[in-house]
Length: 394
Image (tube, rainbow, N blue to C red):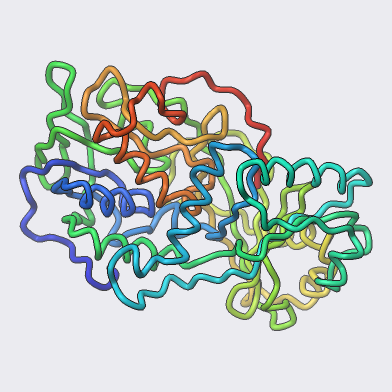
């Protein structure tokens, strides 16, 4: 458990709102629900918060989006992280914010034109501080880039943070009751309305339930007769320890292949969304022991020094973790009510962008829940027409 968050021994029997899932989405929702006046209970099956999908994340954030829905979620969330201690009312609270930038790079001969169009789309949305570089300009800034790089974009205020600290900051400041090591089995309804949740500690009565359970969200809403349009993809994260990896590097993403890396504590995290069929929810999620070698090879395409890192790497200096992206057909999250069941809400389907969207996604959910935002005007409603977005997928 984290500081200031206790596993309640005396379980409450009633609440205004029950949130199922104690990851970053659930913790953020608890905080903003408290601001709206809800007496909230968070149910989490693990012994600590943020222990499933959140714990396996590379935890980066970026404002480089040209889709208005993504910009709506990400830009205000980044602003929240930049003033997080003030937001939660805990002076000097540190979430490990590192704004070392995010670099997208390509070897495409037409890459400069493609990136130019992308940046123009960002500027139309008010994101004006993304820089466009030729390959030579990118190498002048980061000499370790491959000579094959033809173009890049860079935003200096993008970066990463500690999701553990964000989760526990929101939880501490929320005033909610957190029931850890508590399984949620079933959503109970009567007359088309939510009446509570059956848990391993007994029945918890509440007129509102938020499902923020990541890979297990679809299973839980199904107990109330609601099927969510979600599917699960395994994503893996390798850590390699090597002091030669530049600690002042930004997040680096290969725009052509999707492989990415960033510095971390004497080494680097590497990720790559390799093609895999959708799977069933798992805890724990098994990792491929060969993934680090594949990720190193992929990263070396644009950053050749990873070939040297791989050549001197020993088993004790590499590790791999895996989680599951909860995905939707159009790549955008599900945030809002779950008709026809009144009082059932969902905060899921973040498609791997849960950390960088959590503050604004939670605020959006509360706006829907309190009626400030009509469901018909909600672009993330559960029942919508799903169209591909063409967004950049990592």
